[in-house]
Length: 233
Image (cartoon, rainbow, N blue to C red; front, side):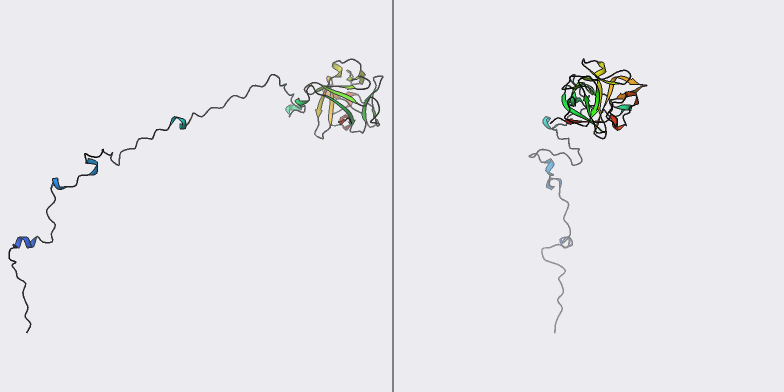
């Protein structure tokens, strides 16, 4: 027959108070037994609290950002550079500075299919024969956009008087100065620098028969005033 053995209520050498405290947490550690934080340890340098602001890192002098320069003044124009005259009605200039002081030997071929010619007597006319004497002219730039035209073989300068008539002059004069302009179709026009007709420029022109026209009857839009400077071979 099995018998139930009772648990003894009293353990020799152990008091009831000790049994009640088994499994319970012990008393709180004393101040001397607490772990000292690392920041308070005298053997290590003190560390700033996490909430303290970190001072900015100084930037080396060679990497420091420089002050942003303001808008600089445009460079002064060179004294040797001549101003380019503006085009009509304030438009873009049609004359080119690289032609200043230039000397060109050309044949002026008009849009009416005539070569400009200055004969030995100073007469101005158009010719179909390109090899005819007097058809080769020297175009010399007097200043930017202004040229003088002289026949190489006869030595006459192309000139225009007050009435707009074309003639050949042995001596260079203000009547021999023409404004050279490159038109949109690639042809050149030559207008008298000195004389104008009712405020309008007067142009070098050869009509459909090769005869020079009076400057007062010419216009920039007329094909008779358009000339193509052809190279002399």
